[in-house]
Length: 527
Ligand SMILES: Cc1cc2nc3c(=O)[nH]c(=O)nc-3n(C[C@H](O)[C@H](O)[C@H](O)COP(=O)(O)OP(=O)(O)OC[C@H]3O[C@@H](n4cnc5c(N)ncnc54)[C@H](O)[C@@H]3O)c2cc1C
Ligand SMILES: *[C@@H]1O[C@H](CO)[C@@H](O)[C@H](O)[C@H]1NC(C)=O
Ligand SMILES: *[C@@H]1O[C@H](CO)[C@@H](O)[C@H](O)[C@H]1NC(C)=O
Ligand SMILES: *[C@@H]1O[C@H](CO)[C@@H](O)[C@H](O)[C@H]1NC(C)=O
Image (cartoon, rainbow, N blue to C red; front, side, top):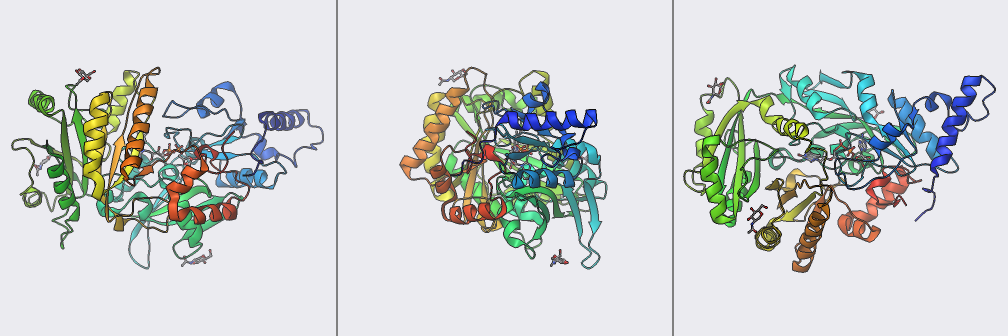
């Protein structure tokens, strides 16, 4: 472990002050070779900016950076990283997308936070470009790493096009989700977002600008995808487009028997449909618990008139499993969509009478989480602590997970109030050459405990999270964390398993001075 991350706050502060001072009094600039003047103008260190960059969606940790960097261009980012890389005492740097991490992953104690939102504003709509590859006739979109998925959706729909793999919530950045994986109900069929990238521009930890793909600079390409920001800053990603559907049939079915529920989920994700019509476009699942309203902020779905009978069902069984699917359609298929859905859903064993359907616009479906967010924001309940835990669980042990975690820990503690998601994915839609880590089985589940808590009781959720992880360890259930959070390097080595050696080798190759994304606490523990 190197010590070179001990870059004192005051040193950057002094550099900024001196360059500013010198530039204002117009004297010779002996320090400009230390911090180029064109860069020093782009730093902020006022209390408000510092405060913003010291917190994230989790509201659980705080790290104070020395300064915020507002890039106007990719060149600025290159200069910044190059400057640190070449300094005798390098300072740490992290891109901050939307700061929607929950454990400080985009924070940098005593270093520099690159505010990607500033670059997005500067580029003002120029960060998303739809084009046709003239040799193949295929359509692609080039998106800046600083862009929000919601804007990618708006821009591609203007051309009647869309991409196939999204996240549930679209106010996240391209660079932020590609550094993790980017998962949702489309993943079982189209793979995570990282499986849908054709090419990227990356500024490495040395400040080099590199275009990479599976054909060119493939080592960097694979390692950056799911790479937790450790190897470079993603400034552009190219993603293939398809014709956009117009509308969506969105269906939920309720189960009280976990094994019946997972059997049906696994059956549905195995449907491939030779002519595509017999395959779903989206599949998720969630738990319904307590006597509260069956809807949560992640989506309001159930008709009000059905709430009371759903609540009775939940009261009777303590946990109800909700299977959620969607099928897209357009003008050509609107007469057949119902029949196709019926064929797919026949033979499923949900509780008779507990199937609910919605017919909504494609945009409304993809943006379904936003209205819940706005509602929580208006109630002051969005910026609260979020002690989340996201796991990938191998299919062979999902039933043990249900009995040990849902039916024991979660029910006994009775504190779980936010959404709990559970749905399966196909391993073959992922690429093991990428840095993202998943269980070693053909089918695995994602389980997300998306807790919101009060400011003084979040520790109870962390205790529950630890208990869940401990249960899995004791029971030999080989779970992997998604959006991982570990404290020791040994934990990281265990997380990456076979990939750990390669991960550390590529770190020394692409970010040898260990400058980037220290908030992940993998190489430089930020303290
Ligand atoms: C309400 C909500 C809903 C969510 N839903 C989903 C979901 O459905 N599916 C899913 O997969 N995830 C989901 N997430 C998690 C989300 O993917 C992560 O929070 C992710 O980090 C993206 O957030 P961000 O863009 O704000 O990145 P940040 O939190 O700002 O950054 C995350 C990490 O990536 C690094 N980074 C940021 N930008 C770049 C870049 N351009 N190049 C290289 N590294 C970079 C940062 O330094 C940091 O280490 C959700 C999160 C929230 C809060
Ligand atoms: C690889 O990169 C070179 C130089 O950047 C470029 O000319 C070439 O077209 C790229 N090849 C492929 C297959 O993308
Ligand atoms: C879905 O709703 C749209 C708009 O209200 C309507 O035109 C269409 O007929 C409905 N389609 C189906 C298949 O129910
Ligand atoms: C669980 O908590 C809810 C809400 O706080 C409460 O209404 C309910 O009675 C509790 N259930 C049990 C079994 O303790």
